[in-house]
Image 1: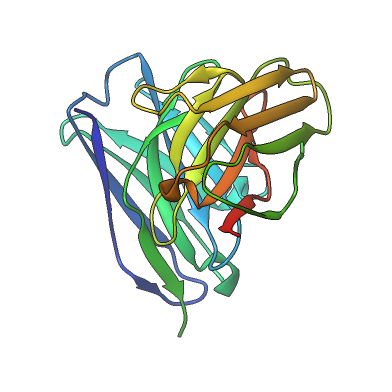
Image 2: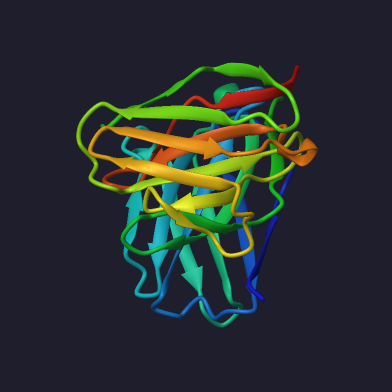
Length: 120
Length: 106
């Protein structure tokens, strides 16, 4: 059964880099049937898609965040990761990782989410 | 970017009611439309993908329809566990979510 779990610091200082990892179990991140994605949700607000990656390492990012976002996959650890640099308070959110279905780009299986607060 | 507009933003309903939520895309997206349910403090859960395909394990009282720019999520007989917030999401281009519809107990 496919499961995902986010991990990383819960507190990041302004202007620093937010780094999160998603550990995948039940399916290999090298499986060509899946994309892997990151989504976030600021407190009390809606969902924002951040980026996705496939097993080849091909990435697609939200243009509103593109210059600050880096996403990568580590097949040896069955993980994929997100880095968001130059963070501000506006980046405070619950960050989710998810498996993404090809074609319709539905986020089929989600991690539980991890709260990241940007504050000094 | 293709923007998604959901309506209503909230609604009150009773157990057993038929509930309809609509989602409109700012331009045509064929059937690249997905629906999610989110409960407080929990991750979203996929209900419908490709506008009308029911995700495995989701009760059949949930259904989706539409194509082009106008889409609908219908819950035929609202159950206590269905009180939640529902989001649509387009997968035609850079994914965008609608603003959400909160379904509350009447």
